[in-house]
Length: 236
Image 1 (tube, rainbow, N blue to C red):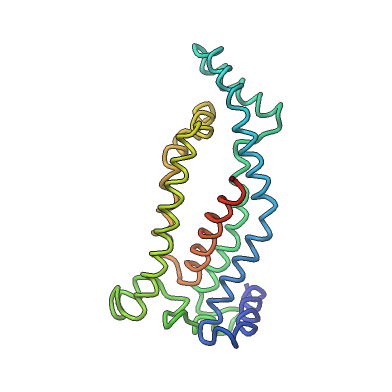
Image 2 (image 1 turned 90 degrees about the horizontal axis):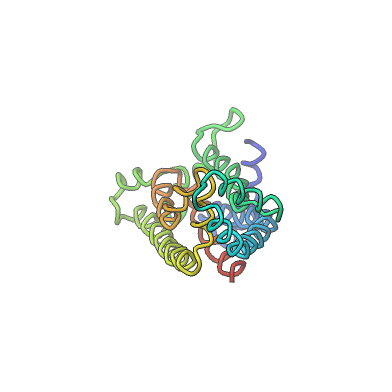
């Protein structure tokens, strides 16, 4: 933890001349971008996998007709097809899973008053007046939702809402234009339920931003926005 704290602190020092009191917040955004660059090869592989799964849809439809009266055999045949073509229906989860350690590091870093037995100096950093270690509830008690601190969260909520609406519309269009994910998920245990709520997943980010420390919320907002742009580029 102390090593990670030093990394964030050094990034903040480098950015101090440009961002002044918000240098630590800018460091978190930069750190998030670095993490996303590291998982970019996996994101590209996930995009290729999605395209491969889409190409399998005619063969899956044929299997569905062939085994329409035998759901268990249909499920087995779909899994065998994926294995034969070396296409994993779960490969798209890897980029997100590999980002979780970075998120939890930031969460704990800005939740602990001490690091290595010393006071956590990072808790004194702010974003436009909002302490990076505080949460939205703290902002509500410090001037209300439209106070100086509350407006920082209003801005983050607005960004998340715009990205969520964009992702919702895009996911709905993708599902309507050939339904590659839903049809496949119907034959894979547990994925059908996930597919039904998939268009709404981005809206859950609003809850995350509201309950985690502002530093972790910055990571979430930056990563979510990056993902939206990345999908447009990789899945075009």
